[in-house]
Every structure is written in structure tokens, then in C-alpha cells.
Image 1 (spheres, helix red, strand yellow):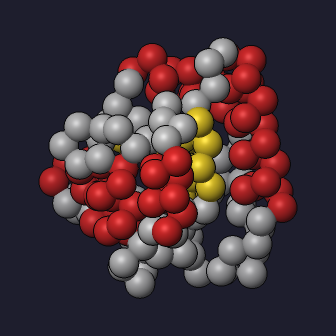
Image 2 (tube, rainbow, N blue to C red):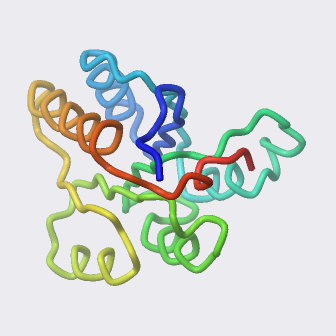
Length: 154
């Protein structure tokens, strides 16, 4: 088992451009030593992981060390994506942190039942987002042990 490496990929599924910018800047503020890749919806996230459509034949695609997943997205929402990812043996060990505006008890129960690693309601200020990304960095990049082969290339 290994702690996540500095070049580990954080794959973030977020449809809102303002939220993507806020997350990106909060990660930069925390000097997160990982590669960060954004996708705009659940369908694009699955395309990345399955190496299809716009990601087809990209030989350098890295399996994410962690996925930060919004629930409410177009095309395929985070609930559907979570359920699918946790049913695939090659992908089910990737930690998935739900980052959403929802604080609905049913969403919380559902995502944990489907195998989410964490459920976080999006902070309302930049300073709070920076604090939250610091905690994610410290926990997922510093403390957590994961299977050693879970970040192999796709």
C-alpha cells in the first residue's frame, strides 16, 4: 500500500465553470502536488475512464488517484456515475469524494450506500474552499493508504 504520489491525478467532474475555477484556485493556493484534470459532466468522466470519444487512443491517460464528483450534472449525473464506477472491478477502488451543493439526507445516504468515500457540501466562500482543499490534500495525499496498483494507467 502506498500514499498517493506527488504526480497522482485528481479527476474532478464539475459542470459549473465558476466552481471549476474556484476549485482550481483553491488547489493552487494549497500547492497540491498532483495533476488536476477537469471534466464537465458524468458522460465525459466515463469517456475519460473508458478511453473513448474525445479520449480515445490517448496513450498517456492516467487512472485517477481520486475523483471529486459533483452530483447534479448534465448528460449523466454523479449518482449514476458513482453507481457505475463502483460496479467495475478495475475502477471500484478509486476513492470518490462527492462535492455538491446538496445537503439532502437522501443524497448522503445514497452516495455512501453506493460506495462514496466522502460527502462534502460545497463551501460558500473562497476561504472555506481553500480550507476544504487543504484537508482533502492532507488526507488523500498525505494520510490515506490505497492499494499500490490502483493508479496504473488506463
